[in-house]
Image 1 (cartoon, rainbow, N blue to C red):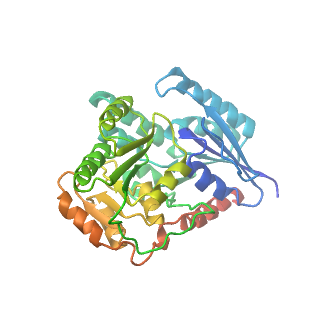
Image 2: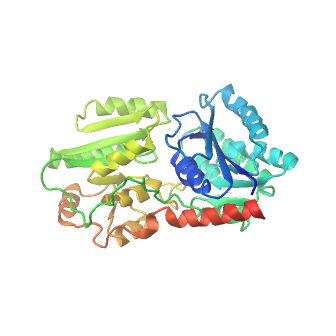
Image 3: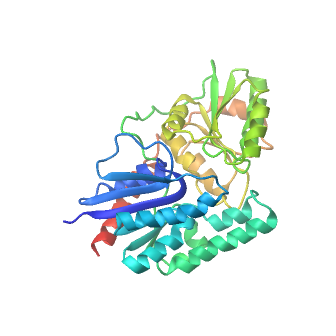
Length: 377
């Protein structure tokens, strides 16, 4: 059997991104005769990678710069060098170049839809009103323009099947479920909140106002007033420089709040380590159309670590968290903190153990079957 070359590409995700490398890349590398190339933003290359995975950290630019435009040229040169039989594109900005390459050199093209990018731009407040709608229109235009040339779509969220009409039934749900490291020990359950010693709370992942970083701090301040052993760790990357500056200034006055990362990417393994050290995980997302129907990746990660979770009220999230005994659904802005604290201390979480359906294995099986079919059709 001749070698099958698969290229997985993202413009902004780091080369060691969990979904790109650990989930998509390592999974596909298990197929006999496959050779996986991962092209993404510059970051430390993973150690001990499978022998049939190569890394191409060819992107390195400021978010708003000419380097971002040059990245398209660099990406096309890599396509000519690798000559992939299958391209998996994980960002809309590389769709057009990939589409043009496919038209000339014939290969299969898969769009890994990790976000509803157009909706994110319209619903979030990262740009001015006029600019964000213009950008959203442009993103959707690229997606529609290339849709007919895309052989299949990977949808990270089930809601995307309804929100993105251009997928037209050519999709497989590959959700961002948790892929455990080989050395991870499954925690004992049920879990109780400690009544003595430090009480460590965790906010992890993207640091942003939309994801409730200020709500997390406000909640912990009120808990700290009840129990001075309460601590908060905020760990992750903050793309908004103004938010990061404000956050640093605010936390200088709060010795019980630890900041890790912010203006730099944090290795995923370090985030997972913090999960293992924490007692409560926070998901204080502000109600927003861009996240309302999505399941946060950290939700799966917290549950895999048997970490009791406080999550913003949302019918979808509440059913998952409370249905599995993993935590509580609250309104972070109006919750009665003394009552909440007593409730947390009285509960036993994960009484039925950690649910099997939060793990990557189910998604791996679907992905392998799909890629095998594309490579052999």
